[in-house]
Amino acid sequence: MTSGDDMSIKELSKKYLNQSIEMRRHLHQYPEVSGQEIQTCAYIQETLTKAGIENKVMGDTGVLGIIHGKGPGKTVLLRADIDALPIQETANVDYKSKNDGVMHACGHDGHAGNLLGAALILNELKDTFDGTIKLMFQPSEEAYPSGAQKMIKEGILDNVDAAFGLHLIGSMPYGTTSYINGPMMASIDDFDITIIGKGAHAAHPQLGIDPIVIASDYISQLQNIVARKVKANEALVLSVTSIQSQTNAYNVIPQEVYLKGTVRNLNPQVRQEVPLLMEKLLKGLSLANDSTYQFNYNFDLPVLVNDKTTNQIAIKAMEEIVGKDNISEMNNPVMGGEDFAFVAEKVPTSYLYLGVKEEGKPEAIHHHPEFQFNDDILEIGSAILAQCALNYLNQ
Image: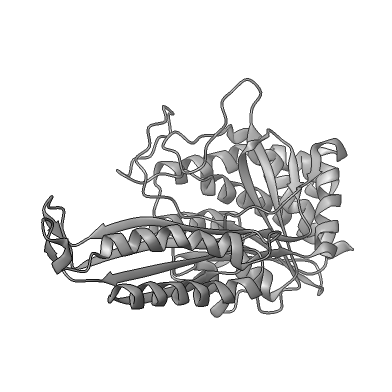
């Protein structure tokens, strides 16, 4: 029988593909939302234990797996997120979600399958490399508090020299990969605002202070921050995503209006300036309209910044697995966020995209109730992660 020592990573990823798919489909059938990944955590632990891979719970519902090489050396971390979304699945698949109102609609089940496949490959090859590989099965990527922060606080990055992650992407052709040096994904912040006016009968608006009119002015003028208060070449998204009042009556001017929204950008300095500009504008409108306000701004996720040197190791790994023709450098960062950014703040990282769009089939739209992908892609994903780890330890 051929030993792992004699097999390439591509051969080993094919060998373990069925196990990776089995895990992915199990997680897809039994999804759990952020912070509630209890059964997901238990299943991952059981799977790693059966494979003889050391593991323990971290971050309440996350799992750390550890593979030791034949001797001392550097430590590299591979990461996958494991939480699902509060969405009712409508996809017609045999492994459809059995948990009402919850589904894996962003590929995190595939990410976990990729990491498991990489773990099985690297565990078979552990006598061929020096150093340590940490496997980070991370909860709560889709919500706050961040699962990455919890695991970091508990020490998952202790002695880690570099980290790699990979996200399945529905808009990229199947089996193609992409990367970017420097900022890759935006910071994400959120805000809650209460505008406090004076309630009145809608037939006598002069007797009240209409917070809806003030809120309308405020929402319109917020875009002046984007267009006129920061440099034109700065990427900044400022969106009000929810407007509510105390009443839904036709003839009542409410006392208060509540706004919620998100702010995303790629520049830490601009990130600090935006809430100051937002509150300054709100204060001015309040003075002009004899209203008051409450302003709450939360700094949630930092910018995800890739390390160029670590990226070079990942690029070489991708070349070995998918070939140069299937690798591209991203033209621009994206304004979505990722809590892998907290890892990137602590250690050099490379975060990669792997396409799942099959020719002739519609794009798999993330966070959509019919999100699906061909899970044969796990053969490529697990191989890339494993190759990144080996290339780093053997450099």
